[in-house]
Length: 548
Ligand SMILES: Cc1cc2nc3c(=O)[nH]c(=O)nc-3n(C[C@H](O)[C@H](O)[C@H](O)COP(=O)(O)OP(=O)(O)OC[C@H]3O[C@@H](n4cnc5c(N)ncnc54)[C@H](O)[C@@H]3O)c2cc1C
Image (cartoon, rainbow, N blue to C red):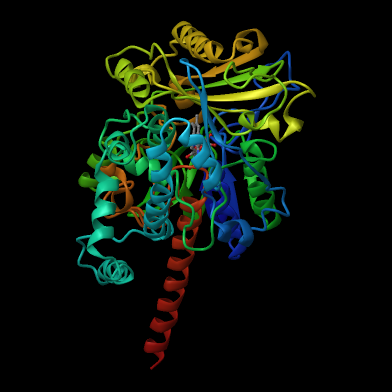
């Protein structure tokens, strides 16, 4: 006899845990099936060095921002250990000398910092910040909006499209033009319109290329910058970017604790091989070991290719949907390098290895937009970047529990290696790439290489094989324009439902993903709960009309 639940959640990443917590909170008996030995997926804290287990690294994702206050408060995450340390400034030291710091919320200090490179840019900064804030007011609430099936004539879809249009009736010609620019321009072209200093533009371009298979001169990167800069999703202001207590695994652990408190059962080491389909319904799952579990509601949070093409099978899905998923773009060229350091970097531009403000934020390797573009072009041409880009952070400047006193953990989010490196390990080449990355930092902080105690390199192949991030894409699919909003993951199915009754979809490949925000999991659970209520209402109505 197959074990039966009201709801099965496939994948115990943070979205799966959020979905499960909400389903259980609504009264559904819920189980999470996670293939790895631990939950968290890409939001994980691990000890990668067997001979130094006292060093805990936030192995893939590394900073928080986009989790909506609604999810944090409804799941009571703070009580379960969720805590964020707001991070310090963006920091870039330059090979030619000098450095820049940019603060998320200190206009006066930004003016002083930017003035060192360009007085004109310093004067432009407040206007840029206000412009971005205005656009974030439009885009932010869209993150919590269920995208309508634009073009569909079904009454529910038409109502959704009309609601969206009505909500934006106040937008004027100027704002629409600005949103259009943001959605279509490259971050480089956009910044060229506003600023003159290469140093300032380099610092501001970083958010436009994070996790993206595109350099700063590629159209669409302006939007990627906005996605990472949104401060308000309509249910309260989000924090600035910050470090999670206990690393990103601390976020997953808090959500897991909340889910368990609502009665969710969590099984790790339980890899789902297939979904059981009967007619047009998903009714259960089969694990690798042949065990069957059944439920009326199944929420998958796996990569779309895995769930739809491998676990469901194209024979159960409309051809157009299968074709959309087959063409889903899922490249990144990201390599995560985690380091244990004996001491903090001693930058020539800002000397001293004692803890200083510039160690507490992003310690970048993005000295100019041209530097980043070259790194991307190398990878596009089939070679790993000669001089890689890095978004570095040192979370132990706040969270000292992650390593022995006096030492530090540094996380380097680096780009780019060729997109097809997800197909083979490329171990030796990754080591050489990491050496070059470290050399770049060493040029700015000459104690860097000597301070490294341990290093851990996670390339696209490992991301796919070990974490299920197909193609090594960090968001289960690129944030390119044709894969956003009503197109994510496929037109007609952006409402967290799928072509199969009973199967809901809540991974980062849906609208509002990626990132550690929980919105996809939350929305998938809400869709399932709403459908259950609607089915109950319709059954009651049916009974009443039959009696009458
Ligand atoms: C290197 C890197 C850096 C990043 N940096 C940031 C950052 O700083 N900030 C940020 O907000 N976002 C960041 N991201 C993105 C963010 O981490 C992801 O978008 C998010 O964590 C994905 O969550 P998810 O729950 O949708 O999917 P996942 O975390 O991928 O969870 C899916 C789960 O399903 C499991 N699974 C896979 N196959 C099966 C199966 N067959 N059966 C059962 N279980 C299975 C996996 O093991 C995994 O636990 C980063 C990602 C990466 C890779």
